[in-house]
Image 1: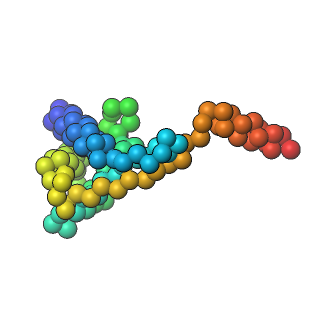
Image 2 (image 1 turned 180 degrees about the vertical axis):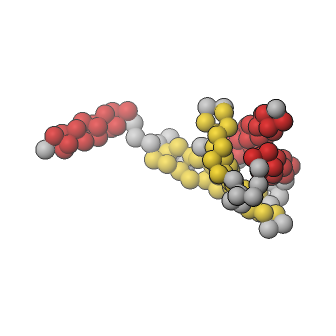
Amino acid sequence: MRTDNISNSILDNFNKLSYLAKTNIKKVDENYKPLWGLKYKHNNIEGFVSEIGIIERGKAQININNGKLEKIKKPFFSTWKRTLSKINNMLNSMTENFSNKTVKQTQVNVLVFPEEAAKRISEIQKKLARK
């Protein structure tokens, strides 16, 4: 039951970080979709949080899909409860120190095709697959 509370706290902290990161994104062009990523480094602890829901802290990794937490990887000699609480503490620290040097925001701009171009590419791909 305690793990559920930690998981809910992780989801809340991820949503807070997501809001903070989205407010600092600079839109380049309407054809580009900006994606944010946050790097964390403090006291030899490194972490990473991305917009697509990947959260890493050291050797531990979890994903957030559709508002649910997926446990992916943890250190061998650690329990999931301890791993999740360390990730939660990292996320808390990231929200508190968002504007400090401990958290660095990165941005990747992904080119997005208009719907017509995507349909055309799909048609060409089908034609090539038939040959």
